[in-house]
Amino acid sequence: MSEMEVPVGLSIAEKLLGLVILVLGVLAIYYTYQALEALGQTWPIFMALGAFLIVIGLALILARAE
Image (cartoon, rainbow, N blue to C red):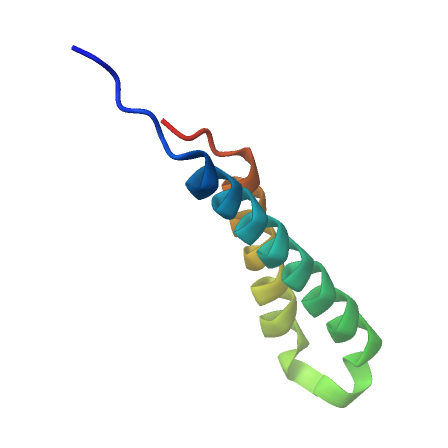
C-alpha cells in the first residue's frame, strides 16, 4: 500500500492559521490586562478565552500532518 501525501499547501495553511490564532490569543490577553479596571469582574473570562486561543494555536503549529 502506498501512503497518501498531504498537500504542501494544506500543511502550510494549517501552520499559518495556527500562527494567526496564537497571535489573537496573545493580543486578547494583552488587551484584557490593559483594561482590567474597565472589565470589572468579567476579566477572568477574557483571560481564559485568550489562553484557550493560545493553546489551540500552539496545537495547530505543532501538529504533524499525516
